[in-house]
Length: 102
Image (spheres, one colour):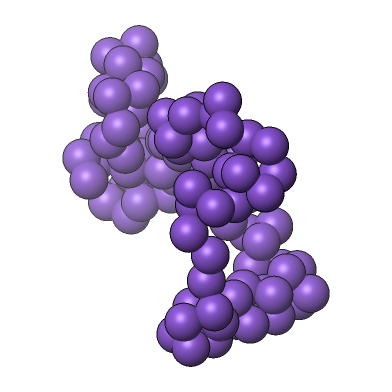
């Protein structure tokens, strides 16, 4: 992570915005101590979703149970799931794209 002083950050804000938009984080220091972290909107959204997930006891329990099911081999083939729910026209690319937006 790149770190800059608050003075440097103020003078180079637009460059720092471009830097974080490319996926990097920037620490902003005051008197040598990191006081803030600049992150992209995409990373911020991902962090919020993660915090909400981790804060939901019911969802966390479901995830634990799902992991047990996977470990025990209680899974379904994706092609079979598509057929069962009439999703034959849904491509794997569409599903992956939807996961990224979630």
